[in-house]
Length: 128
Image (tube, rainbow, N blue to C red):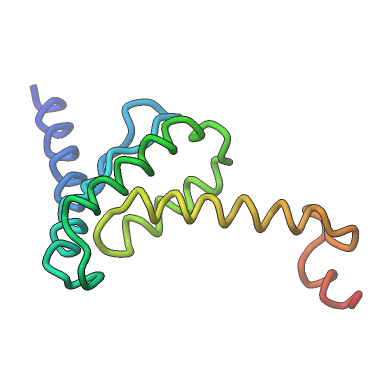
């Protein structure tokens, strides 16, 4: 009984913070996009943007993340979700952008013959 109460309180705390943990380790997390889209609808985020268009964009981003979630690294997910939790109202669009930027930056770095994932940044700077 007590363990169930603790779990309920923990889930409620996550929801109040605008973020809920995924049901499984490799599922897209449930984000509470309401506050972000409410603000967009009031014009406090982007002038002329409606709540409905915000929800449509968030739904599209969520669907794309559902398809590609397993392709992102655990480190990138952890970093981006950490920023998502600390950075204000939740957004699948922002989460998707963060994951794509981190992935693309790593791809560019790995394509450079002078760069290496195993070579500390301090040594790389000294070579140039």
